[in-house]
Amino acid sequence: MLSFLQIRNFTIVESLDLEFKGGFTAITGETGAGKSILVDALGLLKGNRADTSSIRSGADRAELSAEFELQESSRALAWLRKAELDDGLLCLVRRLVSDNSRSRAWINGTAVTLAQLSELGDLLIEIHGQNEHIRLVDREEQFRLLDSGAAHEPLLQKVGECFERWDRLSREKRELLSESPLDAGDLDLLQYQADELQSSLLQPEEFLELEAEHRLLAKGSEIVKALEFAETELDSGESTIVDRLNTLMDSLQNHASLTADIADAVQLLGEAIINCQEAAGSISKAGTRMDLSPERLVEVERRLGIQHDLARKHRTDPEHLATVLDEIQDRLDRAATLDHRLRSIEKELDRELITYHEAARRLHEARVTRAQELASSVTGLMQQLGMEGGCFEFVVTADDDTRPRAIGTDSLELKVSANPGIPPGPLRKVASGGELSRISLAIKVASKAQEPAHTQVFDEVDAGIGGDTANAVGALLRSLSVNGQALCVTHLAQVAVCADQQIRVLKSSEAGSTRVATTLLDEPARVDEIARMLGGRISDQSRAHASELLATAGTRH
Image (cartoon, rainbow, N blue to C red; front, side):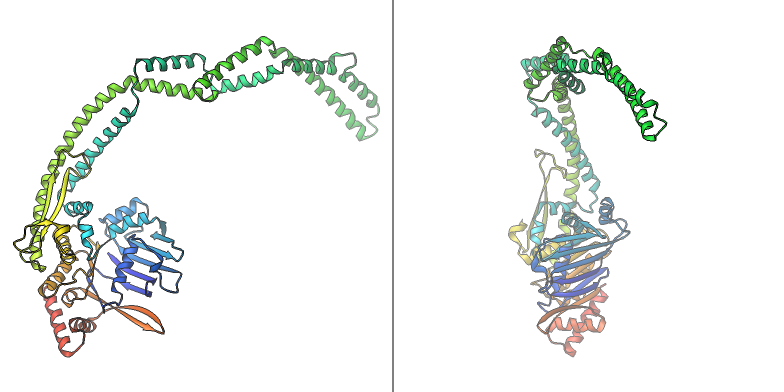
């Protein structure tokens, strides 16, 4: 339920704060006073498209905020919890439209996408206007009207579950069929490639080690010469580096006690002698351990050549050949099981299709019953709404040959006749805008599908009517708000008197600036506003008439 609305710099509204209560609220005021601005603001807060024309002249941005009170059982609260955006039983929605054409939105203080805002907005607010036919002829809206809050919701859920299983199997079948079938030649080729790779394939780390060894062997003669020269110079020649270092250390040893510098030099020479001897040992081991023979080089080049040949054959890098083998083996495995899996899926699909159609049949029967009840109720309400002799039909047709859908196999069509003696025809073709608005209202009342504390907004759905029809519209709007909330922008006193509370919108001009203000009317002010709506001029007679209408409406509560 909408409890608070705040508007800043939106169209001609500079600043506006409004509190709302449950039940039926009438929004009234002179033509052009800005009543529909409130509806437009709520539309933006439920995710409607915004543009810079909605920003008040002279301002750089428009800001809109609304607070909603939720009930534990509400679908909106369930959505918030799933999205991890809940904050107890309150929901604060905020929308900002900037003059750079950017629009941002927040839910309970967290920035969200407009898609998220729209999803939540559809669960918080329904806005109905004279273009209601656009919604009524929409297939999704028709199914929602028929299914929401109906006793057959478990059947609808069952159909959805059956569809999910059938659809999952259908997608798997399509994926299997999309694979190119393998004939005997294809299978032989793939098996040959797999055998060839398995017998010759080097793992990536082995390939890298062989490449490193090849680089070493390619410089074998240079390495041998370098090792022999180093070993001779260090410790095997006639005058080795070690011998010369020993001579130097001996010449300084007798003077080491004289200065710290000489002592350091003696110590460093000793360490150098040890390092050189160890280096000579390592060089000797290197020469012994390394196989730098030409034969080894030939063997390494042969093995690497096989890997490069395989890589060229499979158009990949040598280190990726293991992945190629995995893919070939997977293709062979799938080919071996493809026919078996396809036969299995066909049997499963047949079983699931039978289960689906049985669930869809039960859902169809329940929908037919529900549609007949709705049609009867709507037809009865049409008699009260200025369409005496008219009738309404909710046609539900099952087509078992259609492709399974999550909503079942039914197709829907709304038919109406607004005048006696004329057979019902398609809603979109035979009803006027005003009739569609009243028919929509009748459907809403008949279906009672709204959740508790759900907010419904009606923007001049009573246009073009009067007299007893207006009284009926007001009574229906009030009945629609029981356990919930209905807001109606209206010019009709007969509708306004049925409201639980009334808000007046007043536009004024000061110093070249236009301002819009709202007032929650107390009883005396409400009498004056109803009197104005009755005749345009407030007089004792119009006040008396207004008081009488309010009293009469009150007795009908």
